[in-house]
Amino acid sequence: MSHWFGKGITRKQILHTISLEIAPGEVVLLTGPSGCGKTTLLTLIGALRKVQTGNLWVFGNKVHGSSRKLRQQLRRNIGMIFQGHNLLRCLTAEQNVQMGADLLPGLSYRSRRDKAREWLHEVGLRDQSSQLPQDLSGGQKQRVAIARALAAQPKLLLADEPTAALDSVTGREVVYLLKRLALEQSCSVLMVTHDPRILDVADRVVKMEDGRLLPPFG
Amino acid sequence: MKFGPWQKRSIPLAWLLLSRQPLRLLVALAGISFAGILMFMQLGFRDGLFDASVTVHRLFDADLVLMSPRSMSSISMSGFPRRRLVQAMAHEDVVGTTPVNWNFLLWRNPETLTTRSILALGFEPSAPLFQDPELEVKAQALTNPGRVLFDELSRNEFGPIPKWFKEGRIVETELAGKRVRVAGLVRLGPSFGADGNLLTSRETFLDLLPSTPPGSIEIGLIRLRPGSDPEKIINSLRASLPSDVKVFTRQGFIDFEKNYWRTSTSIGFIFSLGAAMGFVVGCVIVYQILYSDVSDHLPEYATLLAMGYRLKTLLGVVAREGIFLALMGYVPAYLVGQALYALVRSSTKLPVVMDPSRAMLVFVLILFMCMSSALLAMRRLVDADPAEIF
Image 1 (cartoon, each protein chain N blue to C red):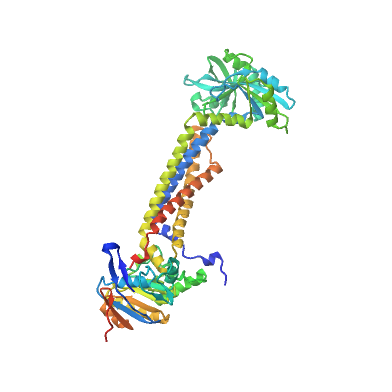
Image 2 (spheres, rainbow over the protein chains, first blue to last red):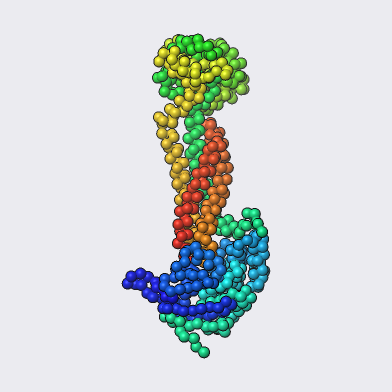
């Protein structure tokens, strides 16, 4: 799979013939210097961008050449955790998580709310459920974001530098929590990170440079 | 399992977006209410002024009205021969007629001694004039010459006549240069053309205005047999009467007067323009509020798109914000409008009331204002690109 940005003379190739496969339940870490195309790859897999050339399958669905509608439906099965927590400022922690649970079809309001509460409990924020994001610490916000992503019962979790805004201890806690909960759901994880302190959570580490995957080592 | 809409509901995002930013909500509501109040006032004044032009017209006890074709409005009445009314009486369905003289005379305020023009109606005290049955009794007093019934709703500039009269004083003053005595009070109300009204007998009227030819009247009231068809009688009267007289239905008589003020003055245009300005101001305010609200939350909307929410769902959130704003902004506008109408009524004596159709119109305008602003603000939402948030 390859990808370009820009048009005409300023067109720049970001990804060069990337080939990557993630097995169900696998935790893959993607590392590399900034600007090497990690985030672009993540947005392609997350069905947030159109695939230009090459083939991309997510859960057996063709993403290349797919319609906007199909990509929107695919995204319901992909959880996303961002560098900034990207919580909705006007919603409480519980309501934020429920925005994730609300995507599940065929559940009553009450059962979706209960699900949101359970997830908040899972990430250890039962007492903060009615607080607004502005009253939570960075680590707590990121844990709410994890609960929100998992509440939609995704089969794949994409995380873009989830520890960037956190100190090392909190960062490790968050990542371990993320891994444990994802595995309980048998959900695959693809995590982009610069952070060398969390490399040990991965089943596999993939390095990237200048839009190319480096051959695996070790 | 099947769920009702209540169980299918999700987080009320639109409501929370508004209510968790109380300052912005307050500004928006103040703006919408202001626009609504402006529209209520302008439209109220407009309708009130048009209604006020026919306060007296509405009171007449008549099914058909005769008027000179040269009469353009209540402030420029021309006479026609009273004989026409007698001719109309010949029609089998006509059961009664009342000749009425109509002119403006100078009334001297007995307190300040300044003069002011007042509408004087002259009629036969024995014949019915208004639908109000009380008038029949009061009209007895007019059989003596030089007596008038004064409209107690007349503007205060005519002097404290109602107060003095109720105190039992003999109220005498000068009308068209001749002495008259107030023999009673009636309640008619000032109109557009007339700040005050008084009733008198035809005899006194002709005495006050000797230039009026005795056989000439300004309006002729015709009462029909109950159950007869006014349209048919109008046609036969039009055919039988000469062209120096025009026949109106009661409603046509009222509309003729209203139409004069609507077409030959700029009142309708001025007040409609005022209401339109209120609408535009409201649109700008709501658009600003919703646009900046969407802009501020753009990353959050993009996040929702990335989570798999449809763009349609998010557009619905903005639309619902518009509806909430319209509903919440209308209530204070309605209440303040009511209060201001009461204030206008008491200070100008204009019949400005909260007409249900106007209340509905302003609500529809506010809803339209909020929804069109929401629609414009939605264009910003399309800029939310979930790929940009990483």
